[in-house]
Amino acid sequence: MHLSEILSCRALGDGAVTGVGSLPHTDAGEAVSLVARVAPEIPFWPQLPQRAVEERMIEQALMPFSDLLLPHGSSYGYRIAHPGGYAELLHRLATVSAELLPSAAAGFFAFEAALAAGAFPRAVALKGQITGPVTLAALLFFAGQPVVYDPTALEAIGGYIQRLAIWQIERLVRWRTPVLIVIDEPYLALLPDRDATGEALRALQSVVRGIQATGALVGVHCCASLPDGAPPVALLCRTGADVVSFDAYQQAALCCAGAEVRAFVRNGGLLAFGLVPTLHDLADVRSADLLTNWIIATAGGNEEVDMARHTLVTATCGLGLMPVSMVQPSFRLAREVAGLIGRMRGSQEM
Image (tube, rainbow, N blue to C red; front, side, top):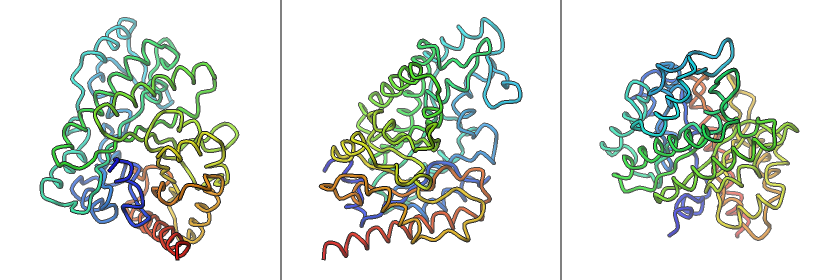
């Protein structure tokens, strides 16, 4: 069976739910225990940005280079501290040992401990995640400019991110369960210059191919919108990933429109619909309305393809900055809408 079939909703009763990556907990063990309850089919190791600054996705990746960097003024991101630091950074990106550290990724090591204890007996895939090369390069500055416009820097960052993803895979495959690595790329949709976006896309495609060469599945997540407000689903489909993950709560009608998305699904690609909004208050959000969004979103898909079989359900974005009290309601809605998708498909087959 192809790995995408294992991950498809056909193998999971027409409803696979997973997390984007981050949770608001400060205790890694508690976070992983929650993952076992709310995402037993595709459990993920949780990033915990409220536990420590080092657990935020950019800082997590930049830990080995923190001595070369300073905060980039009042905006998010980092600048290279001195002129010689740029060459040193490029050298170290190519040579440093790429691995997550317990101080910056407590959720990963708690996830491993839970796997060893048999906490995920229903898992059909194990999900990891990593910040993408485009986003990381867009938030690193030298001489006042983001290094995303430097092909040499993009290549070096891409190589480092690829090695960091493969480190995760090599540790997780010990449990003989397919591994899905999702690359988080919010800045892919935000780059204003078409040529720069093209160069950045090629760098991301290279990372995707390198990770896929291990036998793992690769996803790309982008919760940002294009300048016209549309979700960047077609752009994500061009990355070569097996799974594309996006905000399907806003502009649902534009999600699956277009030949590239139809071709992606027809060729076995999976769509991770971010149907549950990442809000502090979900009291007024109903699973029936989210199902309507999914129906609207998939109306532009392939008539010859059962879209439910190519659907995963997530929140629109990570939950790391939400109150802990909102995590279970978010996953409850995700599982409810996934169940509705399954029942709707079942009734159509009768």
